[in-house]
Image 1: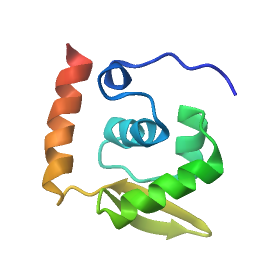
Image 2: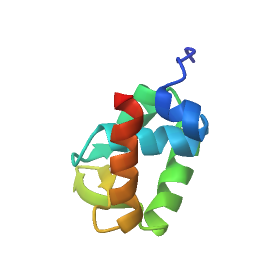
Image 3: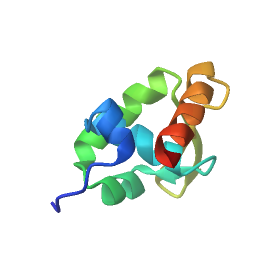
Length: 96
């Protein structure tokens, strides 16, 4: 695994796998991505990513958007008020 630089968002919230996954989906806007994309972009373990994403799905943070062959695509749940506030906060953090 390569060493990744700590982002502004991670400096505020920490660099746990959950935060890295949340950051990935905040960066991606309203586009759905499979777990493989998160694993590659954030350089995290696949089994850990599956576990965290499944928990985030149960917590209504992520939605399973669609399936393409065997891949499941996820995106942020924009009906969740916490996510809407996090999007605003994320934008403020990365622009300052």
